[in-house]
Image (tube, rainbow, N blue to C red; front, side, top):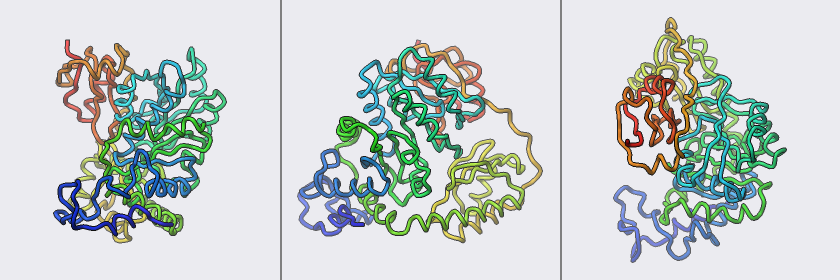
Length: 438
């Protein structure tokens, strides 16, 4: 597969640059020669007709999408754009039904677009996970006075849980409702026939940089072939509303080069990685560690079952020069890609060592159901003050109260903070919260 963006950057003259950026291609970090702006021939990300249009079309073919758009500002930009498109299609007051384990970027998008959210609460779950049945979604939708602009799900979630996207899509499409999926952690799933687009989602975002060899900030907004042409035609304008007019060409180049990477034997490399991961899971299990069910490229360790908190296990890895994705009192999350080498697996097993006697399991704390006292938008734009969490009950949350990672809000803007939220603040080590000023 060709790489038109990378090819352009590699042949672009380094000397004689009488345009931005200010480094003029000189090697301060070493990458500056490839770091340009929208000069002649480089195309325009939000009105592409040349190399960027060609590269995005390559990506759409790879993912089987009706349209794929690049983001240099992560999935956050894509989330805002697809919510804007959904609300534009509905033609009514913007209401979105969303599973509660959303990323805080969703909350900010709802504030910008003045979207009202009707939450889907898990029958059993935690802050990060929100397992839902298609029947529960159907009941929620049928209980509304009018159809929402869209249903919004996060899958995989931060601990690796995956929703039944195919069944959820069927529930939505029977009611002529769009299904949007935050698939930030699952760009690779198309090569396992488990990507949201493959399973019936109408729009989804992928953070390419999370699981593919793309620079930080590189992401995709995918639109299904089922999406009406008018909606697809407005996608670039929606992305432009929320994106910088100076997108990073280094990030765009990495997205472009990733097309070649995916086309050139990625399915085979991914299959090999999954085989190695299966062996790794067996080895860690033989060492006494308990691993939770998760998406294929993630290891979610129940650290307490092995005698440590997730934080303590993370420090054990750090002592051996190993990094991790996320640690809490309960879990340690590790993410793997084909770029991890066999020695990485061996070092991980050695660093984790044998599990010890289990610690008491912490009580399950479900998401906090705070009463919505004002709209998300009004709360976000109101005067705010920051309080210790112990002083916050009874106050209205102003900014999404969240640790990052996992960036799933304990309390959402506009909600009254109650005892359930306070318990979650304590569990996740959140010490302060922004509230609407009195």
